[in-house]
Length: 81
Image 1 (cartoon, one colour):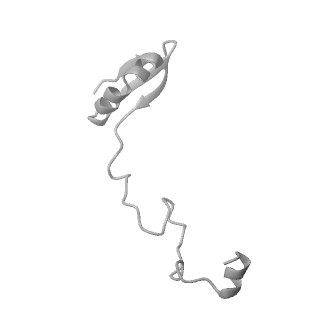
Image 2: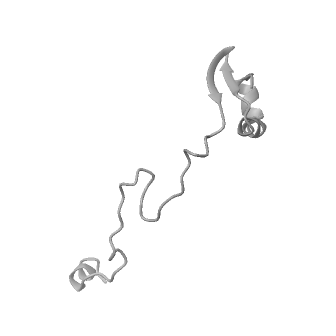
């Protein structure tokens, strides 16, 4: 499908409709002073994955099993509780 070019001001005023068009497969090019800057294309659904509880998008965060366990008395005293 061919790309359609819009100037930056026009793209700002029509962003919702341009996003819809891009989601349907149309390449939308946004230009400033006639010079193309960016291209909006649909996201490949294979790239978007479900979030896993306790992990960030890179998968490096871990929540300990005792994350929500009661705190020790000495820690509670330090917080004035």
